[in-house]
Image 1: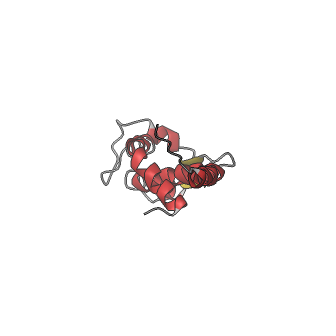
Image 2: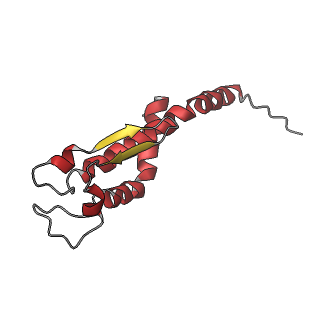
Image 3: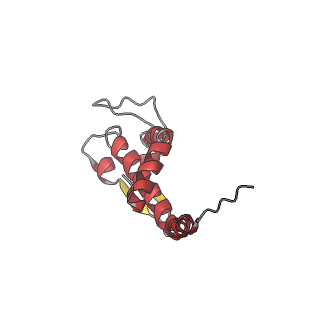
Length: 121
């Protein structure tokens, strides 16, 4: 009979460290994704004199989530009306479309943030 023993104490310590960092990792993932969506959105948001674009921001939330958006009284109206004739190649759905694009790359973003947070490269 073959008797093999494994010492998994290092693995267990590593899992404990990872578990303790999960809230920070989750918050960093949310913030990274929101910032990337905001960056893309900045190229699409309607722009006349820049008031709408300047009202945009990304904010971390206490629960680890992140919010990005634009804060003028007309932001939602412009976002929801693709039939408007926007200038300079800008368009409606300037929050929704970038958010969908970033969601499609979520696996890459999550992997990158986890590696960064854990010092793996």
